[in-house]
Image (cartoon, rainbow, N blue to C red; front, side, top):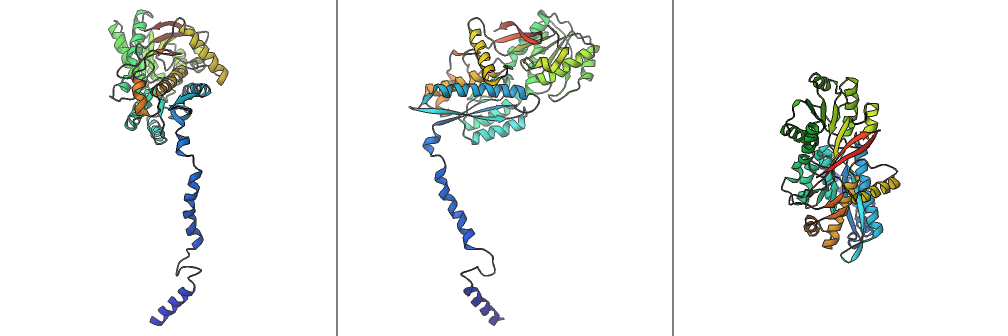
Length: 406
């Protein structure tokens, strides 16, 4: 045994220049990992990277309300393109704004996942999300990272009542939205028996509850409150229940992708009631989704924002420019995204820094910024001051403005 062991050692020593004893490891592959660091200098130098300001945008660009998410994203792209064309100076040098768009599909879990992705990408700020249900959980992630966030459309009051320092919104919240619509249902539409449906999302449930409070405060009667989901397509059971209660107004807390088929089924069941909803249904797409069931003066909704007088000229120009650039009409929120992004960059310019900790105080101090959606100022919570609402109906398959309410 000892003799064989010595012989083996001798053979291994002789073969050492070719292979290790008993193994198949070769010198060449071992050297390859060591060569990897040499490629590192090809990456952009830190100085070059600092000239790029990354702004994240999140909206549902897939799923049933993808048309609203794309509308939002295009609003952000329009702002980015215009600002880059104009030239932005920060820290004594020209900077380039880069949009990092993400899709949350209107799903809270996906919303937190993309929020984490944007934090890891070291964005300087975030515009979004669209839905309250994705905006609220994502806001905790941005807050922990110290990244300011402006939502152009999340209306649930909870969003700005969490005690976070860097959350803002450029639209009125559900308290104002639901309250205005509830009073309108009783005082103007003369609703006697009012039915309520909500999709159980943070937005739908929130605006429905505020609507109910306002109806009752105005002396109206809510005869039934039914529930669905944001992915449902069959509403016959809940609509039949409301039909049995002889409703003359149906309020839906949810988005247009559900509202359209719901209106169709109301008509099929012979329910002759006015249909109401918040900004989630108040889109340019609703006539397509509801089809021939949508008749003149049947639907009443409120867009969370509004301009009057001379300010309408700016909004009309925005809509025309948007159409020319994207070959698409504005759905709902694109102008608010556009303003939100411009407000954020204006704060960076004023602070002469894109560092969130340095420009956040300037963002908080925003006062009467003249946007296409009106003058923008924030209160201590991050809510827009004096947020307006625009009451709308549909005539000839198109949105028609009724009044701007503050």
